[in-house]
Image: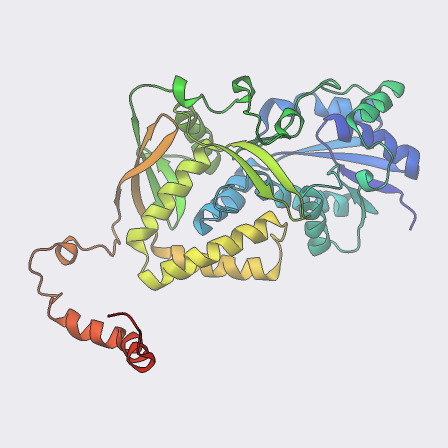
Length: 402
């Protein structure tokens, strides 16, 4: 297939800066760059000028923050999606929205192919390419890391120097970093030894618990149909809510995790993450569900939360199974409205109160005092029937226990 025009997911970092020139040399094609703003802030400054100087015909810079927060981050929160019970999916959630707009631009430009800079050992190549296949299967996918022979940082810097390509950092950079509205991740370099403690100077969104304030801070989070809507009574847009809560929780050292996770490609990877707002919102949302959802729905949803997280982590955001789960989750969230009060202190986020106008919790029923609705004597018949199977099995098999 002849490649005349390629749309490249462009960050201006080491890899994608080089890929622009590599594509031109390899395919003799026009390269259109595309950068998505999902909350990485200053990294987008001067990006368009740099892309054109490097050889691109143009560069799209798209602000996707509001859509990212509402339709990706908040969906994961409504699902209580946490991969392997620890990772809040910061990178995993950003990739499908970036890929979706990537495809839209490629179709608009009449491009033959799309290109990404994800490595051949990571999860991102899967996330990008599954989205491409789901949304525009006719487009060719170019993954330079699986084609070229530039398989080390040193070789990449040598290529950049040879072609006069300005790139950030140095050969001695100690780790790689990915930032968006939900989190910052740190991988590689000095972190590849899982026994090495991260250097404190690395962190950006959070202070260390030791340096956090000596007094706790109480924060109230309002939810409407499962989505965060206000902080301390102040209504905020999804982006403004995330930004504000990142600052509040980060100030108290909330949201740091250091984990070894199982990548889809079969590799164990050590990652360090800062996810202050996400940590608070996940804890608050799940707690609000405890008074708004009936037992059976909540138990099923808890089981499916892990499935949802795995689908997101594995890049199956646009898969039918995940879309079906979205429909189930949206149905469960119709009554998840209320306020959760959290206590932030020295790296900890503790839920200390919850209330809802549609709460299923009844103080009069839950109380040990007399209740007309709940008759203690009824429990005997319930236990006899509920335990009948256990009793029959025990009687027939004649256990040796006396």
